[in-house]
Length: 158
Ligand SMILES: [Zn+2]
Image 1 (cartoon, rainbow, N blue to C red):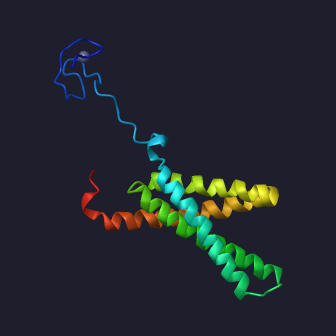
Image 2 (image 1 turned 120 degrees about the horizontal axis):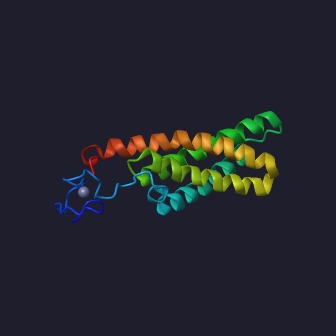
Image 3 (image 1 turned 90 degrees about the vertical axis):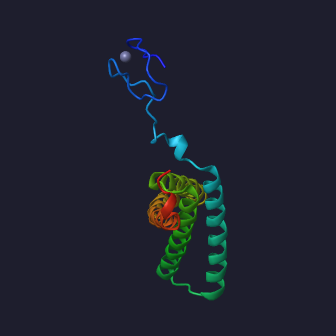
């Protein structure tokens, strides 16, 4: 491999030119967002969110017959939070060992559902969705990566 700056021939696996020190091998950009996005994780996470939320909502509506508004709000936030934590755990577990990857995939799901809440509930729905879903999603995401790392202790070097 020839150096682009001075023309010196270097070994093929060299990172820097042995004559002038210029980088020959292009730097790998690990923070490239497109590399962190995992569509499979996002799709499965989005489905998990939908079905867990649906199941919990049905159970809560059947079990609780409260007409107390503040109690209903607490229940709704609890259900949303629990659902998003589960979603974050599963999404990040599928995303793998990188915290950034799990976080990005989980936040994409959070923002998508927040926009959906915004379409149903207006600006208030959007803002509430963003705050709760991203907040709980981040918690779930960190747990998901920790579980992944615990289960893949021996092949983290790759
Ligand atoms: Zn050179």
